[in-house]
Length: 237
Image 1: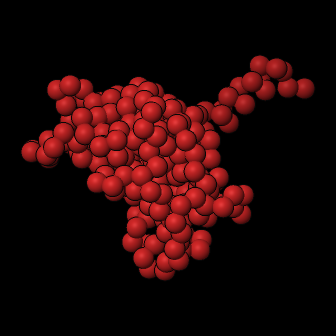
Image 2: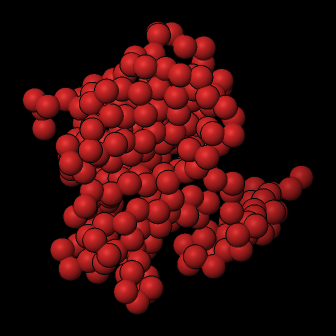
Image 3: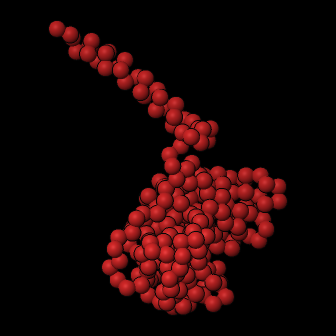
């Protein structure tokens, strides 16, 4: 009969290679040196259910070609004029802060479980939709533009995906592909949901016209465009 100490030794010999491999993979990912082929695929929009409510606003039929051109994920966002840009790498779950004058990376941080898109207020903060994590992430940019840090995670159920910022009205518009909704939030350091609007099915894109305040939601299944006429809530922060 094998003694308990023998069984423990045998189990340890089996576990050590697996633990070592896990540590190696984690270390590579933390150092940013993992090969791109070793990273998980980028997150994407959830598949929308059948709509539960009629979409608000004006809805027009579109084409797959037009829709494809308008639902490209927002992976970059500029702020502070021509000084800074943030760049999202969804596979590495990493956000980079780039000096537009020198091209140097000033800062990089890990963001979310499955980040997909990014937008920024003119002076910051920046906002990342974490589709897998059902969250909107708030990233503060340092006053000197030399660094950034994740300061808030706002729970937003429904697979938040596409994002647009209205810098004039200080509003964020985020589509929830798992709910066929677009939500309005304040574009500041402590955002919360102000209003919800039912959308066309599969709202994979959103655009805002800062001159008029109109918000356009791009639906993919079937291809449709939905326009909300200046829907920003004027009486709440």
